[in-house]
Amino acid sequence: MAGTAVTLPSSGTPFAVATTASSSSARRCLLLPSSPPRRALRVVASAATEAPPKATPPPTSPSGIVLVDPSEAQRVHRLKAVYDQKVVPLITEEFGYTNVHQVPKIEKIVVNCGLGADAGNSKGLEAAMKDLAMITGQWPVKTKARKSVASFKIREGNTIGIAVTLRGRIMYNFLDRLINLGLPRTMDFLGVNPNSFDGHGNYSMGLRDQGVFPEIPYEVGGKKNGMDVSIVTSAKTDNEALRLLTLLGMPFSENIKSDVVIRKKRLKRHHFLSKGKGKGGRR
Image (spheres, one colour):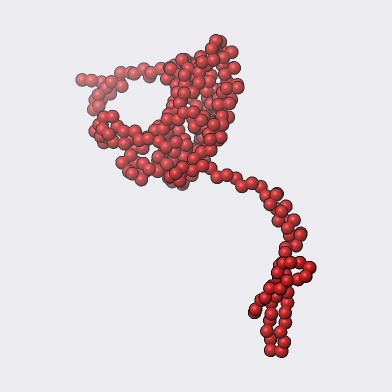
């Protein structure tokens, strides 16, 4: 196929003429530039204007790790908002504080997990650290033995557990999930013990199974790891700390009274009898 350029008298733009050779005759046709229909142009233009803007991906560090959006990190957690808007006025009026800095608050939460026999197993230690990191949202640290104990086969410096200290937004996030997700999913849950304060406004509790959190998948027949949770507050007395946690939603048990005094069992004469002696007593 051979093409030649010709000029029409009506327009001064050259067009290409295609000549096709056949056995009988030669045909010439004028090649005009093809333009898309107006309807197609309108559809493309409307689709371009109505298309939603693409969401910007989260920022990434030079190493490729996805970082948290600054606006998301600076947003106040809902439990912190409840503390500022509802708890502070109620507890100030109840205890008669004259300064806002006297109002007790949660300073930190320490989560401790003992490994037991899995302390010497590298795979078990790594799996326990991943589970605790998924629950708390922060990577834990290894706790080491301070001294050697021969009866427990522990040497000084060996890894015996893992722990994590939570503050700020991560602390309120973990406490919110503990109160509203973890404790209600505990088997035969009747409330936490209100007598577990240490006398300085700090509260400690234990969980036998980490599977109560939705981040840990349920495994039939798998080993259940427990953990200890210590809530450190700025309260000076246990009554102030109890009221603070109650207003935040901690489900304390009403069946356990705080003024119950545990009396030791009175030992009788036969309790002091040595082994191998008869009922007649010592000889």
